[in-house]
Length: 438
Image (cartoon, rainbow, N blue to C red; front, side, top):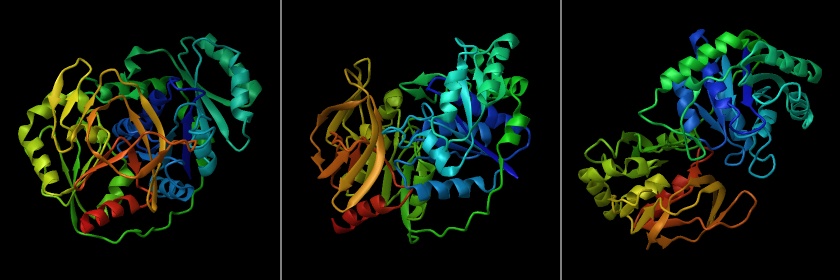
């Protein structure tokens, strides 16, 4: 017998990440094997999940991937765990287009019971109709329990328990307001900083969970039997490419499933544009997104690394760079304060953080005979751009064309779109085919 549940909320900023991290660590501290998952295209929460649980966190996204892929990923990664914990995205029913890609859709698809996190700082019994609506809006969603956040007194909690009794949702406890549990945010979500004591925050959250949340009861009401996962065969033939992937404080936005697919093409070589002297010998270079603007001075000062990447690109080396990786490959990056830093200069463009607006949303790209999906999330934009624009059409979640672009210089390809190719390797295959024919 195992347990699994999805942590969601009526809206963002309700505290579901704090509760998720606290539960992951509390379960780990009890000696249980716990597998984290994250709804949606988020990169940052899975990094914190891994720290809290000791296991890699897997993204579940029904917009970017097929339902069968999401089912397979959930079954394969949850098989070895005693408890599977999925953190939702935004509010329970918030998706790219109505419910599409929402936490509710994933909970229904995978038959995962939902545990709500409710911000109760300004509510008492009035929480009842809100809980009733979340429980009954779509009967296929199994809302079984609730944890209240920002509850400082037992008397306040008693009103909330009364509401739960009348609605038919089990109250599992509460968390008081605690400044020690706050994780700093950047842009819309949490971020990663060497200045933040994430370990201390996570352990404090676990202790708070153990003090006022009935973890034993939570596991009891979310028990399930699961069939043994089938041994899946790789859909890609093994190849012998040398694949260099940037990974450090500036470049951390990678999907575990994307890396698994890349590993079928050859040997993965991790390297750091911040700390290493040069990129490794490679047949394919992947520069993922991240926060290069926060480390622009250090990236600029690493002259030997910039020169090695530029030389690789100019010699026809195959490269895919997305978002932060694109910014690094440009000639210059201008920070919020107006200071400009030299980058790798492998692409004839420059980017800026000044006077820009947020770009956010799912994308479907149609490139000749290939359709692939992903998302955009960035505040930077092009300051100058002389790159060749490839004939790729980009659509948002409602099918409306966007001004996203895929650019090329020799065999270097770059876009602001973060691509999810964990469902199949056709995007990578197309890049390899172009290189072979160039």
